[in-house]
Amino acid sequence: MRADRGRLTAQLRSADEPTAEQLRRFDQFLSHKYKRKVPLHWEFDQALQDGFRLQVGSDVYDWTLDGRVRQFQDYLRRLQPGENDILPLMRQAVESWEPSPLPEEMGEVLTVDSSIATVGGLAHAQYGEILVFEGGVKGMVQDLRPDGLSCILFGDGEEVRAGSMVRRTLKTAGMPVGDGFLGRVVDALGVPVDGKGPIRPEGYRPIENPAPGILDRQPVNAPMETGLLAIDSMFPIGRGQRELIIGDRQTGKTAIALDTILNQKGKDVICVYVAIGQKTSSVAQLAENLARRGAMEYTAVITAPAGVSPALQYIAPYAGCALAEHYMHQGEDVLIVYDDLSKHAIAYRALSLLLERSPGREAYPGDVFYLHSRLLERSAHLSDELGGGSMTALPIVETQAGDVSAYIPTNIISITDGQIFLESDLFFAGQRPAVNVGLSVSRVGGDAQTKAMKSAAGAIRLELAQYREMEVFTQFSSDLDETTRRQLAYGQGLMRLLRQPQYAPLSQHQQVILLTAAMDRVMQDVPLNRMDGFRTGLLAHLEEEAPDLCARIDQTGTLSQDDREEILDLSREYLARFRDGGKQGG
Image (tube, rainbow, N blue to C red; front, side, top):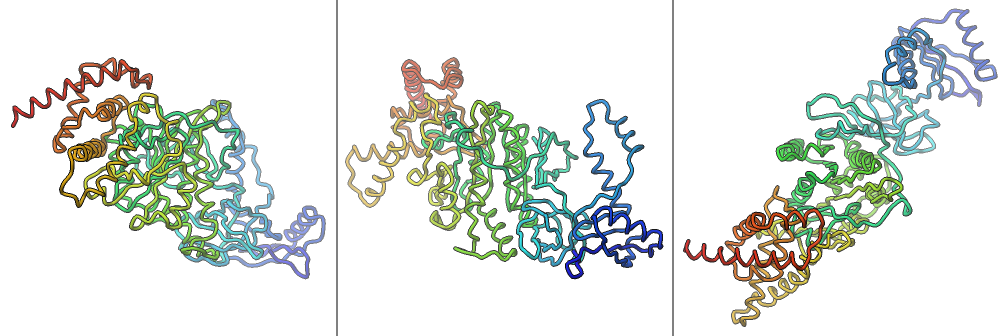
């Protein structure tokens, strides 16, 4: 913007000097447009061979070939054709369109530093608005200051130069949405990266959206089953809940999320997996594993790998949340995994330090809590008036040496409705999933369990807690009485029962059968090294002998006393057969 002693001035740039007649017409246009005399200055610009560019304050009239083409594109976008009349309408638009002097607010890049650009001249730009730089690189306004604004860049910052022009789009950052994204791997802007061709979106949703209010929600009361016995029995997750998965590196956090996605097959649940700061090869392998097991049909993968700019890593979870909201507001149930929010916070810290925001504890900016709260609060079980859809969030956080009291973990623990804590010692001892019963919790609890699961699980968590306590007190004792010895064997059997291989989620009837038999101590005397074989054979036996019982549990979610007795009778029958088979084998 230029001003001579407070007066508005105009600057004309072109490769050819304007004639006297052209200058007269410019003066006439400016006087009519701005209702006053506006001094006009001409400046030679070798790059503008195909037109001119007139700047009045922050208004820019771009009469170059690119500017007129862009104006025509905007004109076509505003058309609202029907399904069958697009070609006649476009033909009519081309024939009738004439370029007109429409102002376009443009600014100038002052400085570029890594993935941050400082822009001057855009007096009316808003926070979160998308800007377009010369060369096509897009950015988002992230900091507003009296002397300009700062913008995070979504593309290669080396393509942006100081002194180049930047224009407003009058749009906030959005994510294309639609069924075309299911089965695909896309980046944080919705652009496919799996080499399977373009995706035709059904619409766009802003990546930043207010969370539903209290009156727009209803209680979380339907289960989002993970298929993992250790979680569904003790720490149930409900549809619309936010359950944190937390633990050290390489303790099976992503494995829990993947098994949960696999367990949604055939349950009318849409899944969105957001990978933040991971290796591209890891994301490709994950998508391949899901596709091999038929889960990509209902899953969309959004990736912002470690090699991309912090800006893309910053917006990736919000983009995934926007895609999930699209389905939630259509009445669908959605599961979204954020893997992981530790790297998301680190990317935001990098951007904030480049934006010269004051760091606080552990060098994170003061608004880092708001970073995740405004994301996770968007998960909800909507009221029936809004369609009754739900979005269940499984954020993942990585700890250092099991320190859950660090800054980011404590922030997210306070936002979520519970956490599943994975312990390194349990993992390396072969207990997988390595769920720590003492530190894990679900604040929704039994409200997210079916009656069958609640009845079958009984007091398993209390039993395991007593076993862990007794194990600590007796580990140095050599003389144990028979009661204590049997209690320890029972606890060890429960722990072994909860071991589950990856990519093998259990259905509801399978979990109910195992828990019913275990809590009645049917498996008390099964050797630990034969527990896996006993579990597999028991499930196959009951599914063969009582298929109606299994179907009834899956369909109704209830477990009558007669059903319970039938499970126990068949379990003891199989136990006798299992023992005989072991003796014969011996």
